[in-house]
Amino acid sequence: MLIRLFGTAAVLLLMARPADAQFRREVPPPPGLRLPAGTSAAVWLGNTLYVSGSLDPDLKRHHDTESQTVGVLTFLKRLLESEQLTLGDVAMVRVYLGADSAKGGTMDFDGMMAGYTQFFGTKDQPNKPARTTVQVVLPAGAHGALVEIDLIAVRQD
Image 1 (tube, rainbow, N blue to C red):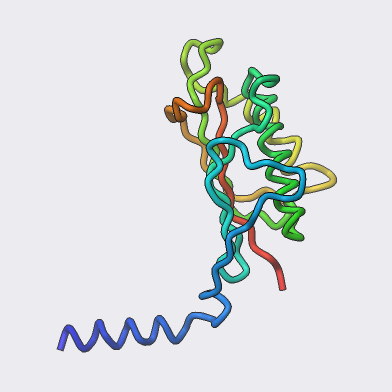
Image 2 (tube, one colour; image 1 turned 90 degrees about the horizontal axis):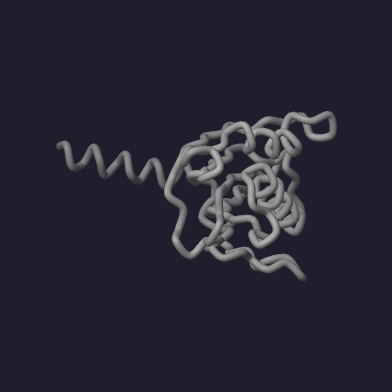
């Protein structure tokens, strides 16, 4: 009885999914824009774009949290635009902050917010997506990285 109940529930869930939600397409980087080290994928699933953790493509010039936040959000904005989306279509952002030696080995939340608020909650782009911010140990291969950001954007029909 229990197995039949779970089987029926699984069939109903599959039937309830819209047909386009099963469509998956990987996104190549926009022309002239190289995915930075640490950015592994951007994938469409139906009307939703999932972008995995991205780093500032110009880490050699940006050495603080604010400038790296601006750098990675500028990159993500261009990636979204290449897919006919805007920052206003972003539903969820996850920000991973590395330890900043200039801040005693803690995350620089104020620096991240100084960069972040240049893109979200502005006069030109008033939308504020849901956001999670945590301190993490960033990959060893991302020399000097203090900020990694991933996001979820939804195309409005």
